[in-house]
Image (cartoon, rainbow, N blue to C red; front, side):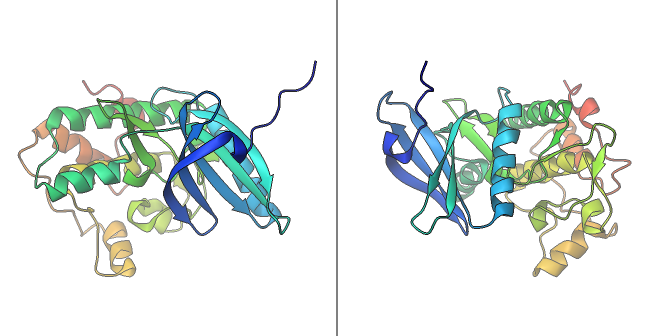
Length: 272
């Protein structure tokens, strides 16, 4: 029996560009045969190391099959005219954009996020990340840009595993400095080891932004932001009391700077 034909960009109609970075771009596309709408992430790999990192992202997606994680569908490789490989990841298309888009819309309309929906976002993020950790995977870059929304209820899909990492089964932490400065945990900025509680921190920062439309540790410069994150004396502006005490306390518990005292995912999954 002949092997199934590998997909190529010729199999898709590009609807629009979703975003672009230094070494790649993402597109909203439609499969010409099935009519299914998908997201395609193209990663240009000018070096062998870049190819290894792209393959790692594919491998991570293949291991992370869960309701609140963006569904990985397929991948293929194209060769550019200069001989450079471009890895193409075919993903579930999330028709409601990402959490950053949603926050901006609410902010522009001067409308706060309803508490019930905030709880839904929190619970879905916790469940998705808890599943990743059960597979010995850490995300390392949780932020509103990487939280996608889909369907009429704007259900969560965690995506972009470019910085994710597989944990050694014998260890519960990683040493790394990867991540976006505003969302990096204090223990990582202090050049200590990245622990899985760093993903809890990322959820906490994301939830704080959802409730306040502000970053909890934002400074005038990147160095100021760095200092605000690591210094115990700096605490974020309190979350508005239009939200219930249980919700505020839960988010605050995820933003405890001492990772030993930070709430764990095991405790978060028990939150009613």
